[in-house]
Amino acid sequence: MIRSLTAALLAALLSFTALAQDAPHTIEMRVDGLVCAFCAQGISKKLGKLDATQEVLVNLEKGMVAVALKPGQMLSDATLREVLTDAGYTVQGIEHSAETLDQVRSRLKAAP
Amino acid sequence: MSLIRCFGVLACLLPAAAFAKPIAYQGGTAVMGEYGAGNMQEFQVFYAPSYRWSLGAAHLRLDDEDQTFSRDISYVRGNLLLKRWNLPRAQANVFAWGGVGSASGDGFEGHKAAWNAGGQADYETLRVYASARTDWQYAQDAFSHRIDTVQLGWAPYAHDWDRLATWFVLQGRTYTGGLYEDVEPAALVRLFRNGSWGAAWVDAGVTADGKLQTMFMLNF
Image (cartoon, rainbow over all chains, first blue to last red; front, side, top):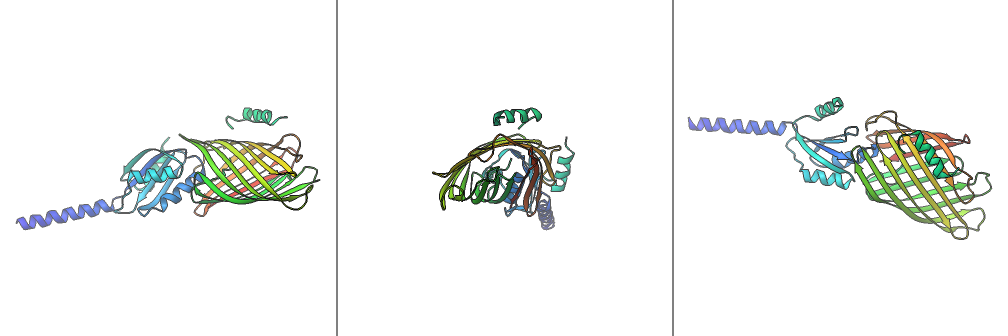
């Protein structure tokens, strides 16, 4: 009985971990100085070169940069801040979310 | 009309004063070409190891307005970002540059060592752009030419990076050293587009004399 319960718990834990790893993980950054298309090009190239990056979204109108991570991958705030600072911009805030990049794109476009 | 007066008139026409940066972004290569109304033609290539500086080479041809003399100057140049202000939905920069090369032309024999120095201050949002720029070309006992340019740009819509950006630009330019008398005003349309290959812009327009003023820039 105990053995069965333990096995069930382990299976639940493993599937939860697998689900968590498959869940989308997007990091949004509010960036000052983001006004020209060249800025967007440079940032997109730099963030896109990171191993954990799946896709990058730059929204000039909202001053936002979003990075979708590959499943199971992680990027620290410090790393992201360093990349943006080295590219010549000022990061004002970083937020993590479980939205997909398409959801973030739609939300930013809909925002006033 | 002085350049300052011309700038003042342009500033009255638009809510703010804007343009091409000698350093695009870290790891970026910029290729630029300009045809300036028959008085100047320039082709430049710069690579930026950092967003703070870039290095490159260029060729500049200068012709006076009466087509009585010309200069051909090939040079290498370093560009430095002296100061950047990152603001919410805006950016301002101050750049300086300097270089050395070789010049040939009318009024002096053979090739001469030529020096160049300059600077630019700019301010940009998604809708307005303003820049003031100065370029000085010098060869001892041969020539000294300064080209001062102010630009004011206005975008009819706030572009995002996946959309075509359109700018209307007013430009005022002066030349020294006998290249052109007075201020040379020009009106330009600039189109700007990003792609997976890089970014490109092209602008074209006319001066008050009806001459072509055009420029392109590629970043990759």
